[in-house]
Image 1 (cartoon, rainbow, N blue to C red):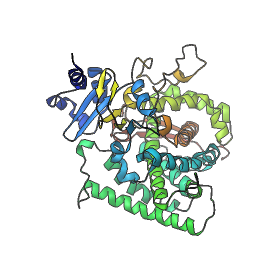
Image 2 (cartoon, helix red, strand yellow):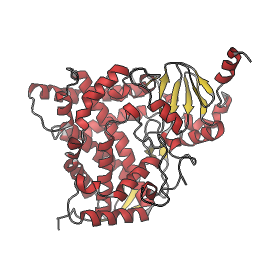
Image 3 (tube, one colour):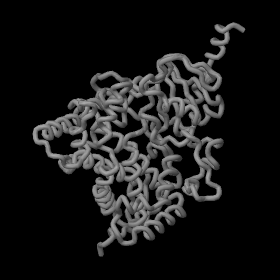
Image 4 (cartoon, rainbow, N blue to C red):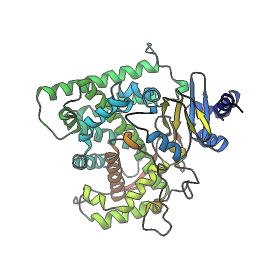
Length: 458
């Protein structure tokens, strides 16, 4: 068999026929979860999927994640921007997340000082204050949408951490505008119309983003005119230097909005799922409550105390495994490459799925079971995760720069909910929705039974 024929055969990637895509209509329209699992079961590690101008190659499993996430930054075989262009209506064209090569390396180095451990731990009082504010707004006997409320809470944390208290009064307005843009990018790519024409959803998203821009640009101008380090992320970005360079104002603007959007959207999605998971598994909530009482007693929560709460750490890892905000993401191939016995051509839009990886039976024992104890390294049945089998924050040199902030925020939220509330689920099952981020469809309605005062308050 000649090499040309071999290449032709290998290039004939497995996947559904054009007509066979009708079976995956729900996935094409914005609920890809069952479709992704079904495609993996039906076609294995490599699957060509998509219609029209939206065609992708799906790669499944830890090996696929490792291939894409450990790519060399200086001589990349894969680029991010083309696939992640979908995010630009929210994050802007200069954001680190949609940058490649030297632009990404430079921007990441300049953003990194804003997320060093000492600075992140300095945000704990803001996190705790906003979590208390949310809980204090709940009344026994009422039903609340916990997802909507934690979104508001985490939005306020993100904006206060970025800007201090200067824009605190505008957090709800900024959140409403960003939500318009987030709703657009969380659509299926098969339903998008990225043309800025009056009356379109894209036009509304871009207009909302521009209104957020105005707040951010004005604050940047004030800080440039009156430099005074307030200890927040914006000051860290404005002061950051790397190899004699600094971020231009447009870059600062896009990093800030990107950080608000990711901190607000991804973190709040995980937090909404955390409420759902804890109420669905009362034995987990009981153990969390016991650990908080044993470790913190009547002391206010601190980074040091929360760092000693192992079970909460395992619970957060399990939430991020089963309820990862990211469903799938990907890269564009710069050159032909082989994977799983198939040749994937240069220019292919290559996707990997955290959602599928975290549910693969060959990687996880009893993968659909919510079991924080699986993360206990001292347990006799502990099974160390295969490298790149747990990728809620991506990996390699593009790993989410705010992952430690997000984990700390989630731990504090879980601890305070366990400490101060008694809630009951209103719905036994909550299903996911969304493509860019996995949201709880219809929210997380809960009945408020009891609210206890913060520690030290009668």
